[in-house]
Image (cartoon, rainbow, N blue to C red; front, side, top):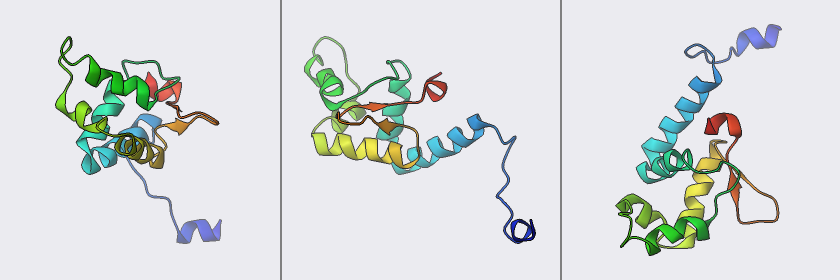
Length: 111
């Protein structure tokens, strides 16, 4: 207890999980608006899995559905896309699925 008093936890807002996620999202957005856009887009997709081949399909249907330029830039190459997912993973917004190239988002965050 004495050590805790010397190093108090940083206080913020109403201490809610939503506040924590919002802070993490703002950090992601400050580093890459495109990656923040991917996270927002993911909210409309299934939270259980997202992988490069699924997202790159958007660039192939660009003639049918106007794909946002930021998404086209993210899928230009697989390394760029994986780097985007690493940024989201760094802030614990998504997790890599074991033994696959897929990532998932926690269901509560997805809501």
